[in-house]
Image (cartoon, rainbow, N blue to C red; front, top):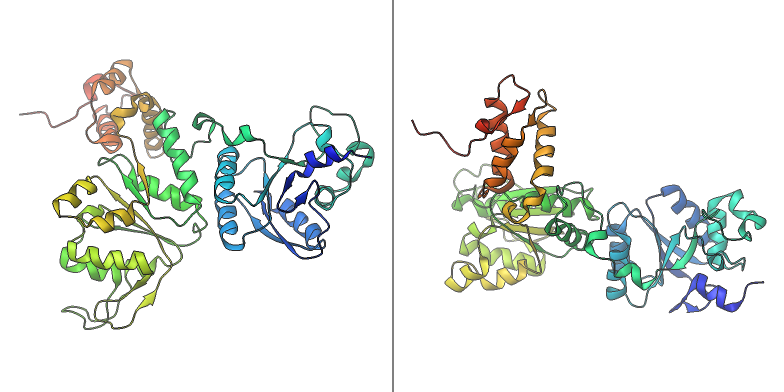
Length: 420
């Protein structure tokens, strides 16, 4: 029979009880976070019969949304998630939801953690794992290198303190520099929430890529991702483009039209070059951010819209606010969670990986070329004022200049038009 201390190691202590996570007569809420839909389903069936109200999540972002929504007593998280690094995810949960009992389905080979004491949660896990997991002899066996079944263990404090270097890079993020690892970490942390994000960085650094990554990792991924470049639309039409308009609202409005904000309902609206938004429109944008309601041009009625706003700029908005060309209150409302995209010259150690990635993408449309050592050295000498976008253009130009040759030489690396 298991000792009480062993049981405590299995289920931990917390708001649910001391040493035992079971036995309450009332319904309790638990979130199951795992990419394995089959495992989630089997666990849900087992726990539902034990007075657990179960909420499923396929990843960390979805689990965070469930925590916001239902405020459960417990969170059961797999040892691997497709979108978030488990250690950093655990740290955020502890900070934001200290009352939630945080546990992990872990493959650790700790004999104590495989206590035969039958409590509800372990019983549910055994049922979910099938006949092999219910083999009492296997369950009671001495510790082995690979355990028979996953078990529930408390996430140790060291997991939450893992360095950014241990974090999982995102597929959109090309590079292994410290700056890119930090950027990926911030994206993973903020994606799970509906917080407004302001992406700052130089032209061509990849701000839209960051916005798309945040949307992909959020629970809004199945909803629209709408993009509006505030610098690309005439000032007179920008308000109607954002908020929509009714028929006859202005000359040329022959029919009503839904704006970009309303079209992105349930999803994400990415406002690129937000610094170019006219001051008069900034006031209307601020009101929408504060109350979630919009009014179409020419309409007296308001419409409530659920949309996450991600804005981007290459301009110093705080400085522009001091100059009176950008509203300070709107800046503070946008910059709830600021994200800085590093310039290419600040992460030159990633240049080789970026070159390989860009050449590989070009190789999907034409024979793939390689870069000579001299050409690579020439790339490293450049300061890249146009960032990754400039690198893409330089490599495309070099590929064309190389003609039928499979290797790009230094002479094909050109940064500007050659004077006549």
